[in-house]
Image (cartoon, rainbow, N blue to C red; front, side, top):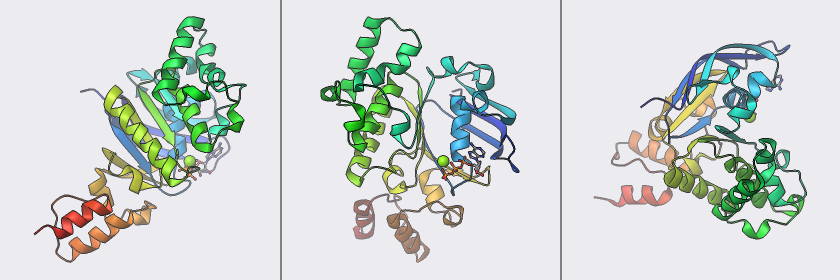
Length: 279
Ligand SMILES: Nc1ncnc2c1ncn2[C@@H]1O[C@H](COP(=O)(O)OP(=O)(O)OP(=O)(O)O)[C@@H](O)[C@H]1O
Ligand SMILES: [Mg+2]
């Protein structure tokens, strides 16, 4: 099957920057995949995401080379407006993404920009609010919502555009553990039921390792590791590249180094307990 996202030899240097923010990145992402992007602060994760939704090179000046295609369309040659219907980016801080008078106006914002007819817009906004369980918030002012609710409203605005690819840049960093795990469940549901593809920058790997098909690790603008969660989390280099290996994986790695297992790689304490208890 052809990849939904095809990054080849992509490099970008911000205007006046001394060094490349990303350099020679190759990456293919299949339709329906969930890919986690990890690596130290400043390694180029957000820059790569901006290249996917077209903010780079359309809005950020700089030096750009190589290519990236989404569903066959070359990003640098496709207008932002067209890209917005293929790729949705959810920022770390939803405050940057919601700003209107009411939740429903906010969700409709992107559709309004497309000049969508009112009744179609109404239908899409209602549908997406229902999908995310925020119908009761429709008339509330966004600034009076909780962080988790704001996050959902921002996500609703993205989903209303019906993109096949959703990009989340540290989506849980402002959320408490409970709300964060609800967001992760939502990602799972949207992936399973609607086949949406996700690229997620996230430090809390214990939340996502189970869900991810693949983890990609970057360092100094380059892709340095790529594999299944098991492959990456059991690789001794992972921590040096700033991947926060969940405690359960650390413990398992220690145990297997001492000759236990492996049967199934555990991502939760419960799975590790099963592994250790099985004869
Ligand atoms: N708007 C910008 N203008 C100039 N340089 C930038 C800009 N944004 C990022 N950079 C630089 O590009 C490099 C990659 O930054 P990027 O934001 O992509 O890293 P990141 O992996 O997302 O980091 P973090 O985990 O802290 O979010 C860094 O050296 C950073 O200083
Ligand atoms: Mg970032």
